[in-house]
Length: 369
Image (spheres, rainbow, N blue to C red):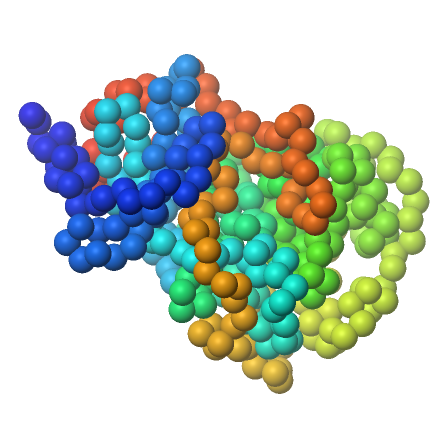
């Protein structure tokens, strides 16, 4: 047994799987514990053998980025070990997610509660962006909530680095209801603004208690956005008509946010509007958002421990345990359509999965892009 295999065996012995809490095409999630301390954890077992060309790149990305990100508002990767042909991610165990909180009608939100969830989301996202990482799938069920009320960004399977601004990226990311218009128009060069749009949609959803922009297809998503925010002009968004997948969608007038968000303060509406600006370069950044007057005005954000929370259930530590992204978006009385699922792609250029499971030394950061 070589040194890498020996270290892997030692790591594997630290953890015990107690109960399966979810299964998808590509992964199984267990509630587990650290044997020495009894600490509860989540163990996400990725089925390496499912992939013809090796290990799914979403698993590689998830390991890579979570090894790099240590922040109270980002889910913590505690360990990684291989078992036969499976890769196991040991994650902190989190009780619930923001989608379940939003949908639980027995819970009453105060403006200070929404402010607290938004502050934690922006803090976690600012840390990701400061480290040149785009999340590319922010939505309420990827914002998990710990027993002490801390909100943590999770599911980095679609994340990627953006240190090279000229690097072409796929536009087929971010669950549709939270996807910005530049991606719907096929933009392949983008940056942190795509995550900020998603946060704006989550912000609106917290106030409405229902998804803000629930489109049924990509074209309907654009219409839904334009009905809510008005059809952009060249002045609003210079150059958008030259994007690869641009098509005229129709002319819709802009509806003032005040008409829908009647109870929101002026500062609240100002921050929301800055998250949902059409021109990506003019959209507010996460750091700037944290310094917005909204967070410094009364009422101040609730302490995380005081935030409303549903009764604890066996919540999955990651909502999407398979390798798919549900592009229809979560929402009341809406079921996911298989045609609306985007499979996380892996190519023949990916590393061989069986080789990774046996040999990859997780004491070092992986070096893939």
